[in-house]
Image 1 (cartoon, rainbow, N blue to C red):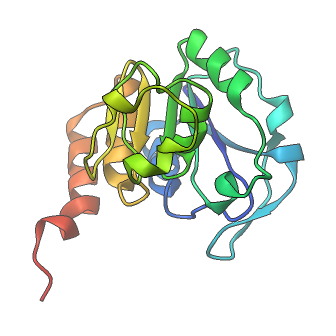
Image 2: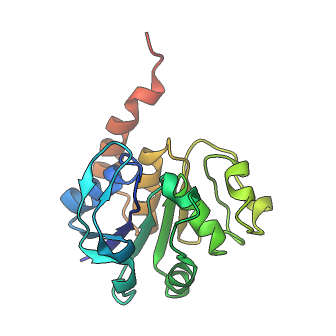
Length: 191
C-alpha cells in the first residue's frame, strides 16, 4: 500500500491538496495521513477544523512513499516550523516530495529545489527563501515535476494531482478521465 503524509499548518489552503488526497485514498487505495506541528488541530483558511493523525515530529520516513507540503499563509508568518532536515532526509531516501503554493517556499528553504526544475505562485514568492535554484524556475500555471519533486502554484491542484501520481508510476486511463473531468472548466470560456 502506498503511504502518503500531508503537512498542514494553521490557515492551510483547503483546496490545494484535497484532490490528490481524495483521489489517492479513494481510487488508488493509498494510506493517507495528515501531520501538523505538535500534532495539534489546525483550522484551514476556509474555517475547516482538521485533527491530524500525527505530529510533524512523529513522521518516520521508513515505508513512506509521498510527503506533501500544503500551502497557506502560515509559511510566511515567521512562526512556521523548520522542515529542512525532514525534507532533505526524505529526498535522500527517494520519497516523492511535493509542495503547492507556499508549500513550494518550504521546499526552496530546505534546498531541495536548488537542482530541479520547479514552479510556485511566482518567482518572487521564492526569492526571499535563500535558495539557489532560481535559474531552474519555470514560469507556468501548472505543476512541474523533476526528479520525484513536484511543485505547483496554488491555482493548479489538478495538474499537481496528476504529477504526484505520475511520480508514483500511476498514469492509467481512469486517472486521465478523472483529471479531465476536474480540469474541464479551464478548457472553456466562461459565459
